[in-house]
Length: 288
Image 1 (cartoon, rainbow, N blue to C red):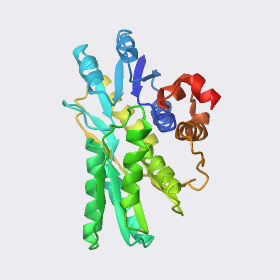
Image 2: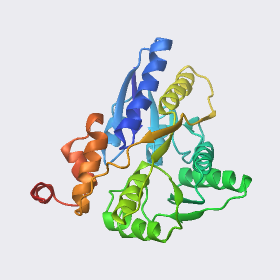
Image 3: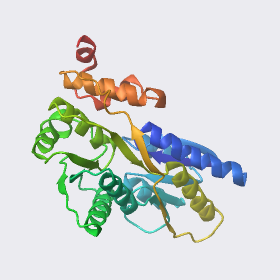
Image 4: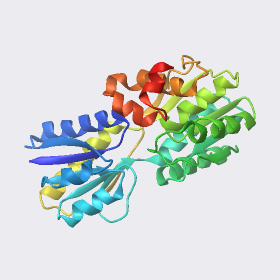
């Protein structure tokens, strides 16, 4: 029985989701063959033509629509996309609250949030601000002009926009970013400005549990149950990350490439995948 898992482009996160799905399959002894498919280009359209038994879909809402049009059972992951049906996703309000509590407990006199105009980012921002208000605090808030998942063009994504924003922040400041794709450029911008970054931590979504719960909901649909649950997965906790060893290259594209290699080399990052995310030609990058 073929099950398609349509996933995004953050390998480490989605490997853990797949582990959660596999754990459900193992415990319940289901005869599933789970096939991961990245949800970009025409790959997902071709995958649906193979007549799978069910779909776990993240990101592009067109995937859920197309699967349902074929009469396939679908469970949505991550952001609640349009339409009805079961969803397993992180509790983004709780992620925002946990991030705010951590920064306040660390004693930062100033606080800030950087996000994007996306549902999950707005929820994390709302949780962040509610936690601050509950303790009589306020924050500086900004939204990037770049949507998550777009190729990071430095001048928009990690360069002048974020550098200007970081430059105007009061200090010392604790900053929460909506996700890793915004957190790393903040650290790099701060270091380029000569600012000390004493710690870099993240609120980790429980991606394995999300995969497990998504598989459970899909199993219900395949068994004929009318699953319409909206399962919110609480965050796994606050985890430490390396920040002070960010590559200090003046060449921003080289620094970006080295950071991506360092963070994702063990998660299946390929040269074509790297070049899709670094906004210069491969030969130019090699020469630099």
